[in-house]
Image 1 (cartoon, rainbow, N blue to C red):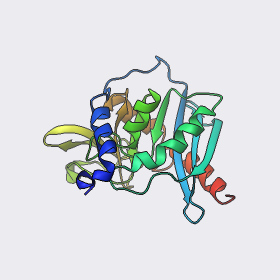
Image 2: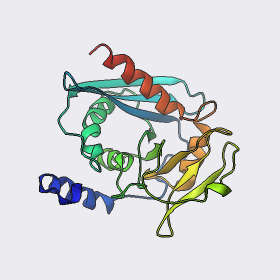
Image 3: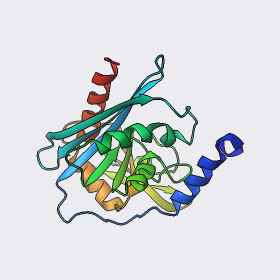
Image 4: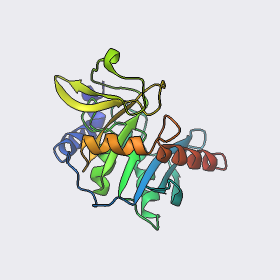
Amino acid sequence: MVENNSDYSEYIELQDKMKEQVIKVDELPKNIRYVAGVDVAYNEDKELMVGAVVVLNIETLEVIDEAFHIMKIKFPYVPGLFSFREIPAIKEAYFKLQIKPDIIVCDAQGIAHPKGIGMATHLGIELDKPTIGCAKKRLIGVYNKEELGNIKGSYKFLKLDNNIIGAVLRTQTDIKPMFVSIGHKVSLNTVINLLNKLTPHYRLPETTRMADQLVNSIIKEV
């Protein structure tokens, strides 16, 4: 377990500090105009990684800006500390944007994480930016599967020790749900509403799909 590895104690302590900094209410512009997706791809043979940020118009879902950054992999794959591996490349890509987003959607966990500080939350705190965690799999928490409707927009709260840590959201009718949670500076209600808007045709939000396409096109050329 990471908790027992002294090599990573400073990162574990940093997670604990960041957990206390999480803001779980909306600190957003009155009118959100731009929303971003982020992703990272790897070339393990060359020890390189590509981080990308794609900015979409919230109304049309058209890509209006994008940026990427290629760098050496500097942090090993350590369960529970994955954000320390991915965030450096994402941050560098973010700084290259001409149009900064109002909120960022991450293909990762927010507070629905064993340490309460998934990649979405970590990124939000580092950038001082509203972020959302939108993951394909659940790491922690329980919900009533039988009560989750099959229609797009149906959701059940994800709970841990009777505390709400996120939601299980059906982004498309009769398709597997997504596991969503607060990243930083956003409420769970806004998380749910925004992700419903960002998933007009597919299970994954358009932000995630566009960022994934960008990093995968770039990593092939690295």
